[in-house]
Length: 160
Image (cartoon, rainbow, N blue to C red; front, side, top):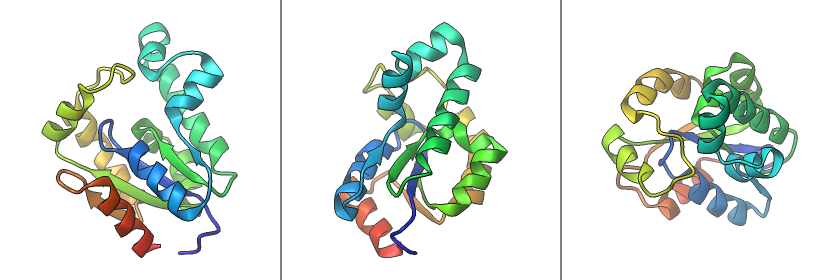
């Protein structure tokens, strides 16, 4: 893999996308674009607040907007899991190196409790719905159930 294209970290909420993306951005010496700060800066609300006030469809549209706009730069991007359901995002991800952080629904549910910025979605339902898309787009899949973020970053750097 060339280090001249974007790196996109995908996975369900609680998989560790932000932590791994930060490590990769530092190691590669490129900026990082995270959907949560993007939503706050552009729309003045967290993902949970947007979902509650405007609905999940609006949230997902804005998350896809983040990924599509960020792909124009050589950087590390965290992509909200919802984005993989959109054909135009999956097509655009072909020009990036995509790392899928995977874990069991039980682990994800436990991790989701750690922050109130996340919408209250069922991890088992989301996993069943989105795993086929993750499989389709991922250049690298890492089970993060017991893998530390630094180990994930090292595996990703080796794969690139």
